[in-house]
Image (cartoon, rainbow, N blue to C red; front, side, top):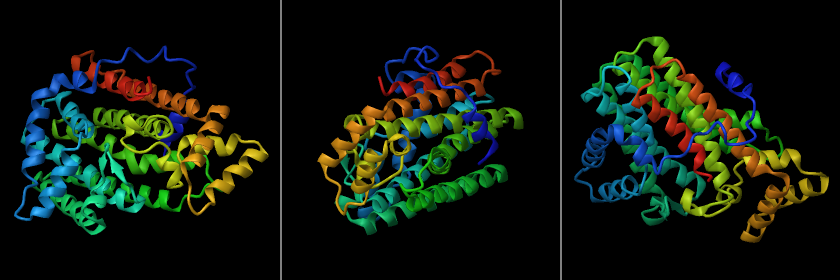
Length: 346
């Protein structure tokens, strides 16, 4: 496992939210400091994807207009604003990040057989798997077309490495087994699948705005810890809150995804409960009553609360990664984002 992961795992758990500052009203409030850039980016993201192919336009409009928070490209913009600020290259790179992220969502939903995405029907349920995969491929090609126009080898190498990591994460998830699940494997999976794009986004903004290597790497560490925290909370909310995830409660369990709450439960359950869990996971079809049974077990063993505590640990690590940056509104935005990510549970 990479060194920064081992370092993260050494941070002690917090038993309360004392180290998490009060949550701002919304992510939009946090990002007001870059609101004009976000508005310009929104227009570019939606406008530049238009083609003469109606099907692609319909798919792109559905997925890109479905309520995504644009957190990853916002991090890229914040990374640039920490130094010399936003320019055309930064805005192009922010588009790249959002297209990469959206492409993975389109592909993931096909692999997972997902019914919904952000409280709307998934693209694959409306237009079919073929349209979803090919539209994702188109967004990937657009992303790398924009990326080459930046003419920045360091950014190109970083993005290429990141997309490879993301694909690796998907394969790790596909081949994971509840029989051998453990927390270390789970962390490796979400680092590759999710957190690396957070880290790459903010580091890319810093690189394009002339940051030193040390500063860019500190922001990368911030993004990595933030992304880990974000994904853990998402995985915990999957067992608690359909409104916040846009997916049915227990959807991950139905897909037999080994997320942190389930991994913890598998490791903590007594012999009888573990035998029952194994029998449910081996069923041909997992029904709502089975999900309810598993959630009861998670509450009994404290698995959801455990996951949320781990997410706080990584949020604290994210903030400590930028401790030596000057106290500015931009730094406060990064700290607020780290707090917001874990406060979604409240």
